[in-house]
Length: 110
Ligand code: HEC
Image (cartoon, rainbow, N blue to C red):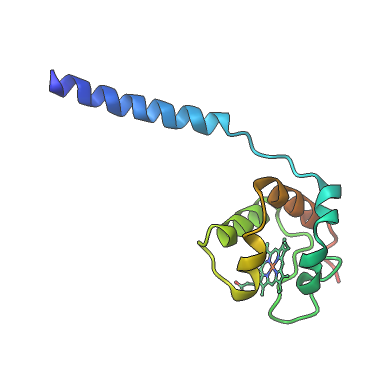
């Protein structure tokens, strides 16, 4: 009997995992809200997403999904940077979606 129940529980686990992945809808970024909460980011990344400091990256026109991934990586400690980590730790998933949508649609040319 035991050889039967094990594959069954593995199957259940797989099914549950894939179902919860389906339930997780990607958040839609709100550009206007992103702009409103981007004030602190602008201190380093520039008001228009173009930075004036050589070691601070430009964000304007960057791919939206890439921005989401990097902000989550900073927030969750997978990417570490003294300047960024403390700011990213305050962000919710919705904040990250909104900020990413905002910076992605800015003109990348200085
Ligand atoms: C005190 C300065 C500072 C502030 C404030 C700041 N950042 Fe950053 N940010 C940095 C630095 C420095 C890096 C580059 C980190 C590295 O070298 O890994 C960075 C990297 C990033 C990246 C990754 C860019 C890439 O090309 O990989 C994103 C996205 C980002 N910041 C978004 C934000 C957002 C959104 C905010 C506001 C919530 C913010 N930052 C606030 C300094 C700052």
